[in-house]
Amino acid sequence: MFPFRIGMGYDVHKLEQGLPFMLGGIRVEHHSGAVGHSDADVLLHAICDALLGAAGLRDIGFHFPDNNQTYKGIDSRKLLAETCRKIWEKGWVIGNVDCTIALQSPKISGYINEMQSEIEKITQTASGCVSVKATTTEKLGFTGREEGVAAWAVALIHKQD
Image 1 (tube, rainbow, N blue to C red):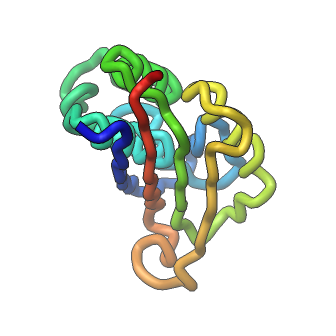
Image 2 (cartoon, one colour):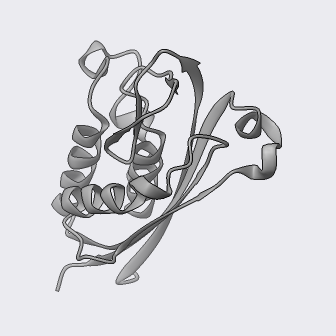
């Protein structure tokens, strides 16, 4: 077995007016929010999938199914914390996480430092080990039409010394 592994996660949620918009563990001010069984934090869901995939532990839907009422409206920070617990339990340490969010609006550059700090706190990674970036997709596709938001995440994990 390699002493390190890499996982990739992807998630997408529909946007709907009047809902709170949770992204990267924080509330982003916007007229629309993501629709989902939990709080629909697309970024944290992508990170969960990246971590679970790296550890060979299937995906977020397997561990936190949307037909289980326990997870109805749940704060996705709790899902990420539980995902990390599962990773650590298997002897893995999270090295770094790199993420990209695709959305036309709102502009999130003013929120990125807070998102990175929140994710570093939950994943117990050092400062600078979480990167969050954003793209507008130049008004193309469902994200460009502001119908939804998408996120990709890549995570590196390694065996604890």
